[in-house]
Length: 158
Image 1 (tube, rainbow, N blue to C red):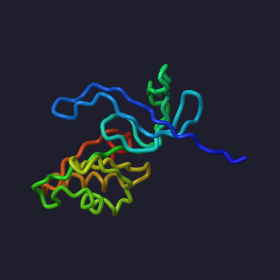
Image 2 (image 1 turned 90 degrees about the horizontal axis):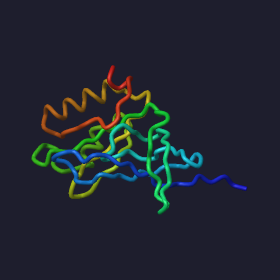
Image 3 (image 1 turned 135 degrees about the vertical axis):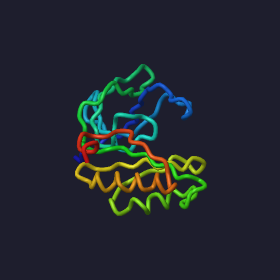
């Protein structure tokens, strides 16, 4: 008998940020570990404090939605969000953002064509100092704006 991993959507609630998206929830794909735990399988666009690979605990409501109640274990990965400056040298191109950060082997997803923000997962053990230097250079040279949605001690001390 083959062991298959059950994929579920785990929903996170948060207070919307002023000047940001009006949403107050985000659903992330996760592989179910047990009755109330799962491993996050994608980088969050809106939720802070969680990264791909983290183990979260959830509660399932009467409608069958799985709501995150907390992070149990960090995978050591970081979530970085990068939004190209439309009038900058990269234009609105998420591909150009990917290309600039490709040296570090980062996986990322694009929010939408209308809003080309890329959410990247910087894996534990990556060159955090190099990534941070490139992100700062990109800000200084008008390529993009960026933020760290979830950083580890290793990230902040790099």
